[in-house]
Amino acid sequence: MTKPIHVTSEIGKLDVVMLKRPGAEVENFTPKMMPRLLFDDIPYLPIAQKEHDNFADTLRENGAEVLYLEKLVVEALDAGGSEVKTAFLDKMLTESGYAAGMIRHELKNYLLSMPTAEMIVKLMAGVRKNELDLVPRDLVSAAEERDYPFFLDPMPNLYFTRDPAASLGDGLSINNMTFPARQRESFFMETIIDYHPRFADHGLHVWRDRNQPGRIEGGDELVLSNTVIAIGVSERTSAHAIEDIARRLFEHDSGFEKVLAIRIPHNHAMMHLDTVFTMINHDQFTVHPGILGEGGQIDTWTITEDQNGELHVDHHLNLKQVLKDVLGLDEIDLIPTGGGDPLIADREQWNDGSNTLAIAPGVVVTYNRNYVSNQVLREHGLKVLEVLSSELSRGRGGPRCMSMPLVREDL
Image 1 (cartoon, helix red, strand yellow):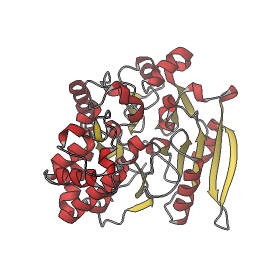
Image 2 (cartoon, one colour):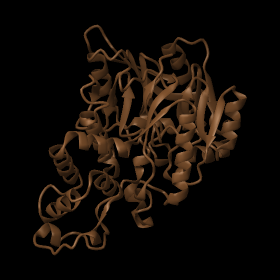
Image 3 (tube, rainbow, N blue to C red):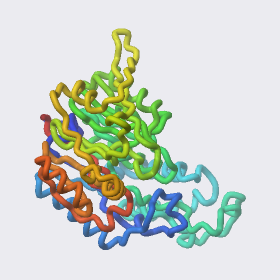
């Protein structure tokens, strides 16, 4: 019987995937709040939802079962019962900055008065201050910033389900995310794994949980084969976390024998490895040429375990050669975003032209707006399934960012 999580490649046929349909959280903020919430624009929700439904339908039409984060969390809490629901809310409020005091008490009562589904929608969308008839009676409530509209911030990045956790073999990492705007997101996945009947008590391995020091996000975690994982050293993932997860994978017989650490520019436009590099076929990858130096060089480290159980690290500069070596291939096809044209490559990378989602070997889902990159992929023999993208792309994430594969067929 296939386990509820089983991912041994980036390209095996996609059987089960988790998405999050954009909700009120993607428009429940102002332009002044965008830097705090890691957004560059405010999507038009009705169109964003239609585009996301188009994305989900494309996955279903190609044989994938689509699960939704928001539904799974509700089902997990209802399966756990009232004590689990209360404990979940207590932890969520603590992580939102309300460990004690009057505001915590009022928020808890307000949220517990709701059915579970309504409570989850409210937590994701944010709780505004004008929703509570609160008369300050302690210093925390009296000193609360009056000009800021929220007690609990919205979580507009939730539709990027790739990042809070990553499926690795028959287990997953539940991630310690970098910025406060996203740190609560991985708590939803932790709750699903612990209490949802589909996942709980099925022997799933949590290789690394969200309480470990060192930041890591799923957009930096790529499963290249059943023995090799690539992880980006990026704005969102630290070298410390990469060494830590490598050690844990090796120690717990995960099946993974090598971890490639690939250093990319530390900036918002290239926040994760999968915004500049993705695997789309046995021997084909997309790559944003802006991350490669002269002669295609980029800092890459191969991490393995030596005979004494210690980590062994080798440094390389030739990414193409490293990929050939670790995957046992004679040749690698690195397909440049925008066909390699510097202007087009930068424009289409900004709109996630490199962020392709493989749903089978050589079959990829992409944003329709990146028409140059899509044509280049077709010229390299790929089957390209384009999805609508005018509003979804405002969040700076593409099809891979918006999906967490749970089960893929082995190659």
